[in-house]
Length: 318
Image: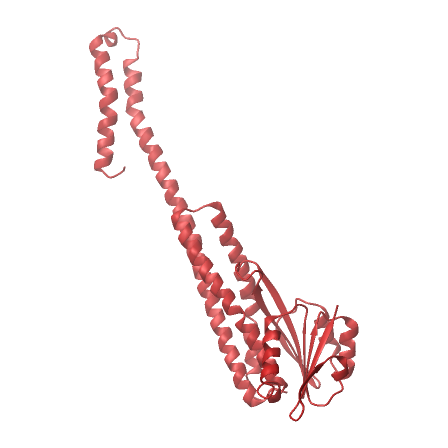
C-alpha cells in the first residue's frame, strides 16, 4: 500500500509534517513516497510536472544508477545495500532510491524502508534550519550520503568474514568453506556491479553549474564521491582476500592430496621388495625348499621393511 509523507519548511513556522494536504502549502517541500503505485505517481506528476519517463522508472525497479535532466527538475536513481540480518554479508538486500529534484521541492521514492530516510528525517526533525532549511539539494545530499555510508559496515563484515574464512581454511578446509567462498564472491560481485556506476552520478552532482544544485552543496557531494572511491577500494581489497581464500583452499587441498599420495607410495614401495621375496622363495624349486632358504626369506621379510623405513626417515620422507 503506498504511503506519502510531506514535510514543509518555513523559517517562521518551522517544519510541518503531514500528507497530501501539504502538497499545496508554500515553502520548501520534501515528499517521501514508499511503495508507490501508478495513481499516486500520476497525481504527483500533475502537481509538480514530473516527466512521464521518470514516473515509469519509479514504477519499475532494477534501474541503473543515473542522473537525468528534465524540464523543471532532475531525476536521479541511486542504489545501496543492507545486510539481511546484520551479520551475514552474503545475504544482502538491494535498496533503490528514486529522487526528483526541483527548484524548491524534492521527492524521494522507494519500495522498502531505508535507514537513510530515517536518519534524514531525524536530522530534519532535530535540526530543521541546518537541513531542509539549507535547500532541497541539501536534503538530496543527506539521503545520498546516508545511503553510501550504509555500505561501509557491510564491507567491514565482508572483511571480517573473509579473514575468519581464510583462517578456517588453513586449519582444515571443507566443502562448506568452498561453498561459503563462492557465496561471498557472488555477493561481492553484486555490490561492485551496483556501486561502481554511482561514482559517475555523484561526480556530476559535485560539478559546478548543475541545475538545482548550489555551489555550496556541490562541495558536500564531493565528499560523497570520496566515500564511493573508498568503498571501491574496499571492494578491491575484499576481492584480493577472496582470491587468497580460494588459493589457500586449493593449496591446502593439493598439499593434503600430495601427503596422501606420498604415504601410499611409501607403502607400495615397502611392499614391492617383499612381493619379490615372497614370489622368489615361493617358486617350486627343490633347492628353495631347504630350511636355510626359508630362514633367509623370513629374515628378509623383517629386515627389508625396517631398513627401508629407516632410510625414509633419514631422507626425511616420513
